[in-house]
Image 1 (spheres, helix red, strand yellow):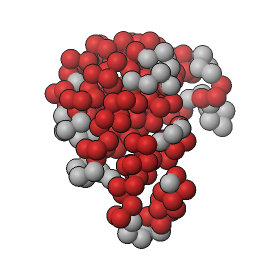
Image 2 (cartoon, rainbow, N blue to C red; image 1 turned 180 degrees about the horizontal axis):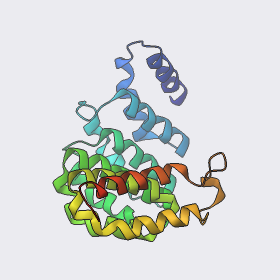
Image 3 (cartoon, rainbow, N blue to C red; image 1 turned 30 degrees about the vertical axis):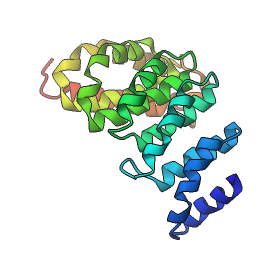
Image 4 (cartoon, one colour; image 1 turned 120 degrees about the horizontal axis):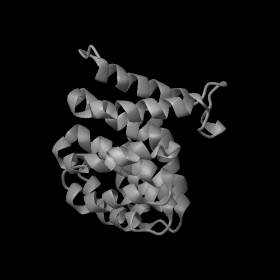
Length: 215
């Protein structure tokens, strides 16, 4: 089945109508016998379906199971799918599980959990207000594995209410200084520049916080 779904993805990329195969992509996720099949299934569902698609609701139980998995790669696959498919019906079923992943020992899992909450913030910001302090702790922790994701989230936070986050200026400046002093691992460098995308995001946030502030 995995090979057939892969061909359907290719056909979809070429512009052909593959609606007949959407249900089989969902079934592949549900019946996957290994991580590779599960990842292909989630990827195809993310491409074929959307948050209001009638088949999305069929993935809830499988996503819940994978979020509880001891295999962090299965957790990541489920979180990645949620970034594309999260809808109103799914939120009560997965919210608590995703929140738990903000404290996961693997940075890639924490990063993807933040991405899910970023998606949720854009649709229903009132649902993550109580996590503000948790997000601040993650930002202050300076974990390079999640910095990019948490900074993207704070860009939207600051756009909504700059005055609420002015106290983050020292934290952001400290992170920027660490980046410039090359405290981050070298694999974050790009053409010799230390973590340029993190630098850009921090400067963007600082610019928004400095608007209409003479100090």
